[in-house]
Picture (tube, rainbow, N blue to C red):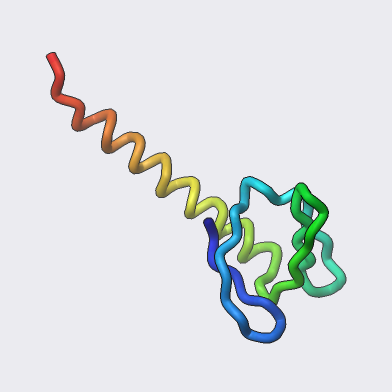
Length: 72
């Protein structure tokens, strides 16, 4: 989940796996798979960066678990 900020300043967490697409209107309008949407202050570049950082953390956790598996 990635942290984002709505136009009114409210912060929330979004499951990025449910994003269908992002429209630039010029704000970022995130349209979800169920067609709900959120208009956020974050730029598209910020959203992409947050998704990449989150995915990198998940991969690191998986790698750490795999590397530390000491079974014979």
